[in-house]
Every structure is written in C-alpha cells, then in structure tokens.
Image 1 (tube, each protein chain N blue to C red):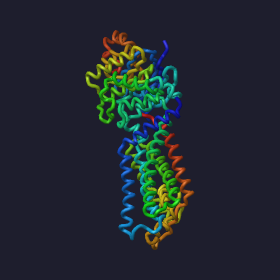
Image 2: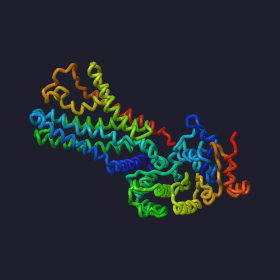
Image 3: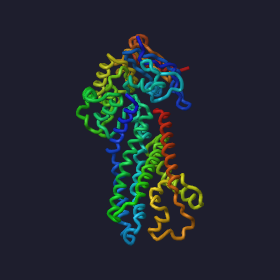
Image 4: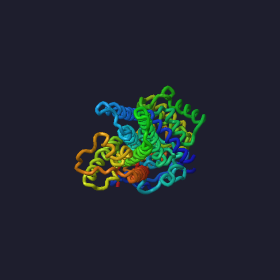
Length: 241
Length: 264
C-alpha cells in the first residue's frame, strides 16, 4: 500500500526548545490515523510542518511522495487542512470565502458554485452562507473550516482538533462527515478526545515530548493496554530517556 | 493554474476587503475635510485666496498627501494580521506562493490608496478651475509624486508589517517612523545645512514644493521672514530616487521576511 503521508526523522526547535525529536511515521493511503499526545507533545508542530506553515529544523515531510518543504504548492494541492481554531476574513461571507479559496485552488464557474453549495449544506451553514463571518461563533467557524477542507475534494485531510468549540450536536455531525470522508480519503487527525479518535480512526500514533511512543491499530493497543485510554495514560506517563 | 492567475484572484479579494472596511471611508472623509479646511480657512483667515494659483495648488495638495499617508492604515495589518488573527492558518495551507499573496496584497492596497489620491487631485483640479479658471501643469508632477510617495509609504508599512507580530504595532511604528522620526531628523539636517533628500518627510514635501519651492509657497503668506537658516527646497530628482528606493527596498524586504516567517 502506498503512503499518503511520510514523516522522516522530523526535528523541530523553537529557539532552544526541542518540540520534535526525530519523529518518523508513515500514514498509508486511505487510512484514518489519529495523532494523540498531551499538550506540548508536538502534535500541532507535526501537522503545521505537513501543511507548510513551519519549517522543520531537520528531517522531511512528504504528502503523496512530494516533499512539503521543497515543493509546497504541489504538496498543499493534495491536502485539506484545519490547523488550530480556523479564523477567516471577517468581511467575507462563507460563500465568498469558499469562492476565494476554491479559485486559488484552480476551481471556478458553475462547478465551484455547486460545490460551495454542497459543502455548505454538508456542514449545515445554509442559513449563514451569505452572512459576514464577523457574526460567527467559534463553532460556526469550525464548520466553515471543515467546509474549506472538503471543498476541493483532496485525497488527504489533516485535522488538528477539528471538534474544538462545537456543541454536542455539532461534534456528532462533524464526526459523521469526517467518518464518511475517511472511507475514501487519508485522514491524519490530532485530538485529545480519545472517543472521537477511536470512532474515526483505525490506527493511532501516540507521541510525547516530540517522540513517537506507539503507532499501532486501536485494536492492538486495546489488547495490549486494555483500552485506548489505558495505552495513552501508560505511555505518556512513562519517563522519557 | 499559473501564479499570475492566482495573483489576480488575490488582488480581487484583497481589494474587496478595502472596499468593505471602514478605514477607506475614514481616510476619504479626512481627505475631503483637509481640502475643505483649506478652501474655507484660507480666504477667511487671509485676504481672500492667494493671487498666485501655484500657492493655492500647493496648499490643496495636503488632501492627496494625507491620502498617501493613509497607505499606513491599509497596509499595517496586511502581513502581521495573517499571523496575529491566525487567518494565515487557512490561507497559507493553500497551494499559492507566499510571495504571490504579498504582491497581491500590496497591489490591492496600492489600488485603494491610488483611488483616494486620484479623488484628491480631482478635487484640487475642480477647486483651482473654479477659483482661478486654470490648473498649473505642475499638478501633474505633484500627482505623480504623490502616487510614488504612497507607494513608498506602502512599502515601508509592508516592511514593518512583515517584521512585527501585531498589526497595531506595525501601524504605530510606521507612523512614528514617517511622521515623527523622519521630520525630526529632517529639521536637524535642514538647520545644519546637511543633505536631507533621503528622508521620507522631505520626499513628502515635494508633493507641494513642486509648485515652486518653499519660497514661492511661503511668499503667498508674506514671505519666510527672518529664518535663522536657509530653507533649501528638496530637489525633485533626488526625492524621486529616494522614494523609489524606499518603495523597492521596503517591498523586497517585506517579501523576503514574509517568505521566511513561520506560523507557529
């Protein structure tokens, strides 16, 4: 099976602080992989490097075999991403925002208009599609964030805490959308919500202090540690060398 | 899809931003107020309008100059805002070069400022025609200098916007640099008889001094009096060179810094 995401010996320093310490992992195409770890473990840093927002101090990240640092435009054309809580230009409406992002990705005309309608319906923002984003709550922005990841139908979704700020109904709807998308796409999904991860993903990578502690199927981890929660607690508690 | 096509898209949406933001209309209102103040106060406080059309033209150039300074308010958040408000987390994950985004933002800002400058000169032209029945040819030079000045101000603002973490600090630092530091250094150099053509405040003055220099300008108000030093009118050519340098260096530096800046 080909790999959609390859992370090779990734190291990232923020000045003297070591955020990633030679992290390596591979996400096979069309697999849904959760990235777990406590705060400051290096999850967001990893995703930001994959999205070309940060440069690695050493090592490399590949999307569909394309080196993100060397060829960001080509690599980014294959992903849809939500990194942190998405923020949008407040002076635009969701329709205009998606129009802007879609056009930047080479979409246009009636096809783009139809697709915008489709994704807006998918994230249930139909009644707000012509309202300026300045009036939006955090959860609504999160919905729009998901809409923009799906807009161009990318083969890889990179999601960093996508359920943050959503109400319980929103969380369920969100999970359904991602679960559905995950049947055809590769999903690399960072979250603190173990239940959410276990419902969407079949494999998880657990990292802490920028190091990979475990990377296995949820079933295997549950077998070894009794539960995913048990695996998380035991692995992240263990002192690092 | 070529980067040029993406650039056109970025310019379009960035220009829409300026059209929808209040600051465009605030700068427009200030420009109009400045022109009105000149048109009302000069005849009220003096003995009618100055005899020399050049003096009135120079006075009226304050409006468009103000519009040029308005570039600071358009561009302060152009780059810093993407990092500060985190909109970059969405925008920068798209397959578009950072340089395309910065160039697009610059050109959209410039278009918005140029619009205000053009409007300012339309008012200058109409006013001069109404009062004097003629418009000096130097108005064209003043217009060109004002557009160049706006470009230079924009580049300096983009530079600070690329360097600073926050939009507000980028705006304030640019304002301090152009409106406080530059005039202070300008005054010192002027009084000590040193060259000062390379300062932004001197460059901004040429928008008015192109109509005949400080002496002609002050002559309209009874002369320069007993000045303790000689007010040397800045040379237009050197000012053009200076503004072009601010424009090019500021812009290239902002591009370079933006490309290297990370979104942590």
